[in-house]
Length: 485
Image (cartoon, rainbow, N blue to C red; front, side, top):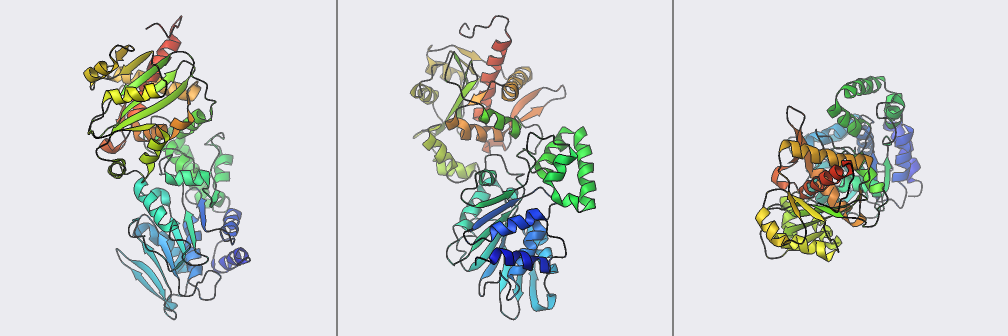
């Protein structure tokens, strides 16, 4: 087994009609080391991920090759059979057709070595159907980012927990970061490593996105393949004229952590800058943005101090429980429960609609004394009763003009500072920001909208814009005294 990596590289070269690039070779040598069970390769689109994987599938189906495991299956996992076929075509091109039986239908994709009965097949993108895998040598997981977040997390758990049933089993994963949401399981796995081998090629955020040097380094295939080079330059020129196309270009061609849909509230790279700032102590007055929720929503508070320190908290009703809410919101299993364990998501037990008093109790329990609270009109009477004069409340009418001002203020604090976020609140903030989009009217005004309608938990983001709007208005005042309201 110790020499397996070298054998894989040599035998791969024998069946591949294309030159093996250095980035692919380095990844292959790392992936097939004796102590590696899970390996991930993340490259921009067009850099031969499917070709490399298809040829590895083919190698596992050639008797006597280094990846042939007598009596063990090869499994391909993809978001759809259509996607799996891309990889399948590369595998088929490397194998003598008369030695294999090929099954290709709407719901099935399988190859069988006639002489031995050895099989490779694709499975659907369901964590439930992936349960029970055992007699396999390698699982190839193609484009994890293409899966819906909850389904993808379930599927990953199912396949990785299938390892260890037979000596030498591996899980090999390949894909771009996008369109996975920042903070979801696939980008987190790429960033943290989580005890696995990760090879990732992406353009650093500090490098200019439209520089050919930046693009070329992130796309090594473009150095040897003229059609890809021409395509990248054409897309780059189009993206220079169109901000929406720029996001897509950065996500898929530079493999950056960028949300790809139009009018994101905050760009991922800007939020990473917030998380990298030093978090100052609680100093000065604290303004709190409050967004109260109904049966499906959370109630949220974003606490913002004069020096830019921020903390966020949320309350959700106890009925249904967190596991069911995760399912309803299509979130990874255990995510909400982890937020609760972190103390930033509090359950209002036995209720279908959380009480404003519970949110206020969370602030008190964390030692937060608001100087003022900003809120919209929803449940305003209940909120005023709960506050009972302990601090002033300012009702923020959610007209286009006010929403635009508050969103612009939040973006300013994020990009230019001094906004920072307490470490224990970062996961909750990321979830909220990934679920909020800013929609525009014909005059260029913006307001927040839920990315996935009633399944989006953007309540914390709404509270953040309310708090930010006030702080920026105060910073612009001629002789600011935040404590006088």
